Amino acid sequence: MRCPHCDKLGARVLDSRPLRHGKAIRRRRECEHCGWRYTTYEQVEERLPVVVKHDGRREAFDRAKLLRGLELACTKLPIPRSHLEEICDEIETAISDLGVEEVTSRQIGESVMDRLRRLNSVAYVRFASVYRRFEDAGQFREEVERLG
Image (tube, rainbow, N blue to C red; front, side, top):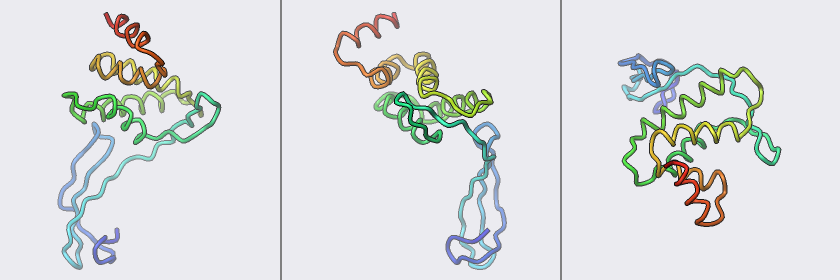
């Protein structure tokens, strides 16, 4: 691996730690030439299905986009980022396990809402309001009443 500081090949691993329930590895490295220390991440590259949007467009599954949506729904709530990462992991695994080439954005959205419903009702209603495109306060009220 090339050093990001001096661009020479050769680094030794100082420390390795599993991440994401053993699905990734974080490695702390030191360049053998200049002594610069840096971190690398290693994970299996999975082929996830293409996401079919409600308007028929197709795009690659984007974990970062999913995480951003979760973070927005959980803004100013006492929910650790690690919980949101776990939700992303669960959804990615579920999608991968389907063994299909395409998945609908609706399937992903429903999966997110199911997990948020169990995690935090405020985050759930926030996400639902965007996902289901609420147009007035009545729709909010109906969703809150369903939570009961």
